[in-house]
Image (cartoon, rainbow, N blue to C red):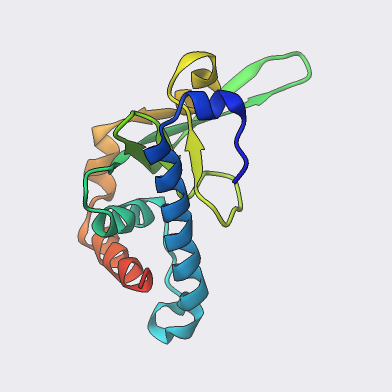
Length: 154
């Protein structure tokens, strides 16, 4: 992968290797999902995807975090309107974020967001942990889907 200097300076080698590993896991699962009839129509959301990754990567290098993602619109008069949406993401040991399922984007890869310096408001500043989201979404259905997805990683 090609990285901007500012991102390389504010992330660790472990962060960048995790990003690649998580992206590979998602590729493997997406490649195999259509081969499993019982899973083909299952919808995986950020909550089950992050939990599946944490079931697979058990060395403590990533942690699942639930909370709110902040989105915004700006009109022609520069009035800013903010919106929140429940979301789950992964944090690394260094405090950066890996989002395997970023809101409003279609990507075949996870994204790595910097939690440092002038980049923070543009990256991790949009992610706000909130235990209320965990209480709402951490249910047996989410965990069942996470375990199904984890099996597709192999």
